Structures are given as C-alpha cells and as structure tokens.
Image 1 (cartoon, rainbow over the protein chains, first blue to last red):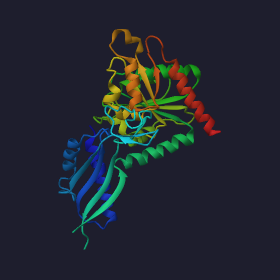
Image 2 (image 1 turned 90 degrees about the vertical axis):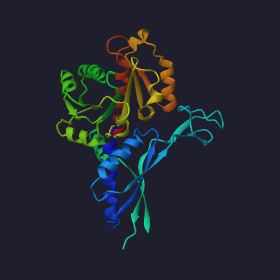
Image 3 (image 1 turned 180 degrees about the vertical axis):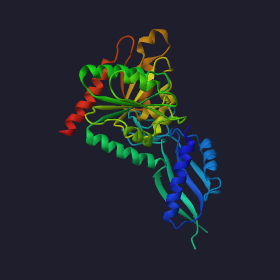
Image 4 (image 1 turned 30 degrees about the vertical axis):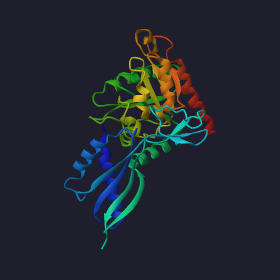
Length: 116
Length: 224
C-alpha cells in the first residue's frame, strides 16, 4: 500500500549511486522483495514507472527478485521453505525453524552504461 | 557495454537512518518507546486510555504520538488523562514513518518522560516495515477479528515482541479460538509474548501494566 514511497526511496538510492559512479545512465536496477515485506510487486512496478517518468532515469528497468520465506532449523541447521509458516523442521523433526529470508526489501545492484 | 554495480542496502535506508537517530535519543533520555500496531478498531486507543489512567495513578510520565489518516479525535481522547498527546494526520499514508515521528517530537516535552507511545495507523501490513526508533513493537489482536490473523499478516507478528490478545471479555460471543491464534503467532514468532487484555470487563489491563513496568525496570537496571 505504500509502494509509491518505496519507489521514491529506490530512485533516491539510484541517484546517490549514480553520483558515486560518474553520472552514468542506469539501465537496470535490481531490488529484492521478500514475500512478507508487505510490498506488492505489481504495484511497485507501476509506481516505479510513474516515479521515473520524465526524469534522468526514464527507461531504466526495475528488476524485482521475489524472495520466498525460508526457515533455518535451530537444532540441525537445515534450511527449508515452510508451508503456512509451520516451523517444525522436516529434516530432524525435533528442531524449530526461524525465519532467515523473506522479509527483505533491499537494493541488490545497478546496471550502468559503460563509462567513457 | 554495461557495468554491473553491486549495491547492498535497504530500500528504506533513509527511514532507518532517521529511526536510528531517534533510538539514540530515546536511549540517552532513558525513554521506553513502544510502537503499537493493529488493524483499525482493535482497541489501541482504548488500551492507551486505560494505560494513561493507570500511569496517572502511579505517577509515571507518558506521552503519545497517535497516527491516523484524518481527524484529531484520538489525540483529543488521550489528552484527557493529563499527558501530552499529539496527532499525526498522515493525509492518506497507511503507516507512520520515522520522519513523521521526528517532526512531531519537536512539539513534545521529552524531559522526565518514562514512556513514549507511538500509536500507529490502523493497518497490519505497512507499519511493520517502518522502523520508528522504538524499543519494541506491540501488536494488538482483538477477538472480534479472525484468529487466523497471525498467518495472514505474518510480517507484523514476526517483528512484535508482545501480542495483546484484546477484548477477551467478548470471547463468549465470538468463534475466536485463542489457542489457535496463539499457536499461529508462535509459528511465525516463537519468542512472542502474549497478554490477554480487555478494557470493559475482566481481566482488564493489569498484566499489561505489569509488563510495561518490567520493561521500565529493565531499562533502569541498564542505565545504572
């Protein structure tokens, strides 16, 4: 529901990174969106398009990597994809899983036009 | 030719930066800051009314920043207990963010404050993503809602330190299964603490007040 402000934050970070890299054009920006991050990927794509429209980032592609929820067993260290957050470890059947992925909302990288 | 630049940072890093500053200020002043999150109508404001009433009786000092899309109603309700309460009207935004809190704080006297309550906008989704510099998040789930909320909205139940299972005096009139809600909350967050509360009937808010006192005591020990 707050995808527009998320899109604006992404664009702010792009602007910062571009300044660090000699003002080159951004072709792609990668963002990791966890399944439980509360961000809707389609809405974010839509808002990103609106945010970069008629700016120096117009034409930059937003590449979303959806990150599923993963648990790691506190007992045996096994990592698994839980069904409905059921935390019982399917490997050792004794341990309890803790979430290690799935709530991130993070920039992963930029693809820039090669410098002169 | 293109070049790939790796960037590892949170999208909401500007919010996180402001929140870190707030957290530092709360720590320096020894203020316990609690971020209350629930769906609309779960009872956050009523719980705060009861809490402020109890604080007035025990001599604690509290302040509230309360967020809503529109109206000053909650702040008006909360000011009746003699503590400062400011309304943050977000004008459509579905959550409080750290910069809103930071701006509103300039209008609050912070000296001698024991607890600052941040009453978030009623919403179980977006507020979970925004760090407000609080010490911990409190999620309120009322029994007039479904007992499957923890699995439907795992983000907030995962990040909350405590869940107030609220309006339990209404349990006889609902199909809410407290054991199921508790089990689901623990699936998402094995460490979550649960306190049953109600504002109009039993058990009331005493156990919640004891819990807040315990957090204040922890803080005092740390500050020695």
